[in-house]
Length: 163
Image (cartoon, rainbow, N blue to C red; front, side, top):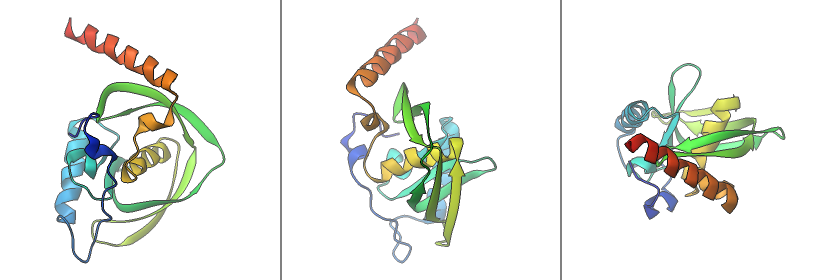
């Protein structure tokens, strides 16, 4: 797992090229799902496991979904706040404001084009993982005050775990 201090997380990954794949799409799909489930995440981007392509896995109401070359086409005006974490930032949880609903386009591992709408938690996860596709991190969305507060809480939490 690529951790928060690694500058690789802030690099913009390459668009997945189905005509000349950088990696086998089906193997990548399996690898992302296995890692996401193993680490008990709600989502995981390929660049978080060291593969610089625009692909991520996410938990949906039904089964895990792996999206290639995701795009958010439309965002609802309605927003919600919720604490978020990131597998690359273990133990760090920050309240983030996000759109309640989104309309998206993406491809599946076979290259097939899809359009989808997501609301609530699924929309939040899609937005979080999409930020990884731009080299952005969830900590970029908060004030320094909120970030410092969350980091102090994480430090105290980790100290308690070590006891």
